[in-house]
Image (cartoon, rainbow, N blue to C red; front, side):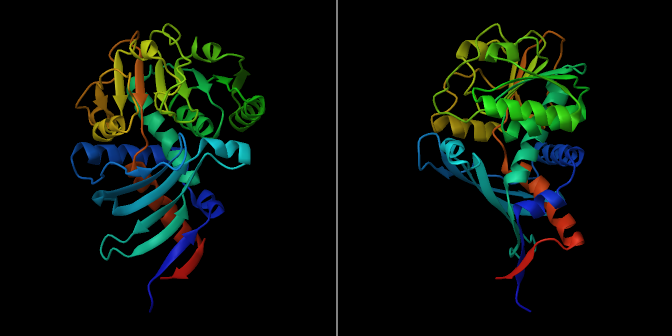
Length: 323
């Protein structure tokens, strides 16, 4: 019989996708494996066809999860004006025994969910346990998944949202309020979204030259910030106020710096695997300002995509294609 693979569309992936609690758990397992040195993930190479646009190849292997594959993902800020998503891509899973591809699936849903889940994992160790107010800057797909993940871990009561695009802000306010039953306040300035928040998520486009809107003194003592958009929203002075600045992978962080990003960030205190494994302490006082700048790891995708694949096979979703 000829080898074949399973193709899963965006709709198939969304239908087969695990809930956020499962994704968070899968990422925690992955970070424990990473801390033990039992994974393989080279820094992601990429091409850059336009200003602030990227297309990256993201391979990874997690033996404990029998997960191997690659994500081919692009981010194009100009897509918003075309009515297209900022982030798009495909994930290929390979059989760990034969190397043959077993599935090709749309990567949009997985990218969104695992990114939110990574913020939640970081927040478990870096945010105050009583955090209840989330400030969101940039009201697209990532802000939605980050709120979804954070409310899985914390008793979130209120979301303060800011976006330069009024339509995006209005849609976010309506959807998050109705979907999760949260109080959502649309605010008129970035400062209003940051001040008074226990957790801040910046989720705008990734920029090589930050617009540095957030200034020193805005992030409250005791607050945690997740920089989904690298340091694009943050001034050097605001970042320097962090008592602990963390990332999801130090080697990849240093590689990304060689590409022209992160010119004004403080030294990295720890990577998430060190926090999850207990090798380094996370938050140590109620007054610490903590920041996680997660780059988005291929390991995140390889921890999540097999969950989707197994459910899709069980439910008969997708289309079989001959190789």
